[in-house]
Image: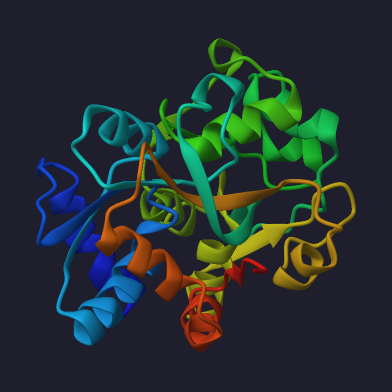
Length: 267
């Protein structure tokens, strides 16, 4: 099933809550992982008959729902923190975070200082970077999103320092915002951005610290803003959850990860 179809479905599901039941699995959280998980879940259902309900809403939701018993597994697009050690992380894939601009934006690769200046409002026109004499539209991620947390951490920023013109939640919202505005800049999952660019969405991924934002750079361990994609759980896993994790780590599913431009975790 195509990523965009799942995007529309997941936006609806994110607005609803659902208690886990013994005859099904509820998985909530990261919008980066959700489209991939939805397709893998469909395959798992076909093989086992176990219903899997995948809902997006951000990594923060995934963690909260698992802790409250509202979900069997949470999707978290980063490593677990020190204060989250009550949870168990199950790495399923690797991804990175890419800065994106419109395909028609001729801006050269940006330095770390330039990126910080853009996001703190100190650099507000593309003309200062050799581009058009137009203001920069700064697209930023909302609170509770792992992508935002990792971006801020990498650039040494606090969220209250960011001067955003548009705050978005889902990756697809960021893609749409930048693809629809030749003067916007944002950051999203590398997997999501490469997928969309390869399907004729007018985006350009900017190198980071001289390293291309690509799956090859991720695989080689060269990309500076990479991350784990996790499913998290609390307490003993039920039989269905164990079966799903085994299914996800089966090399036979690698083609699905690759179709969504993610690197399957080494097991």
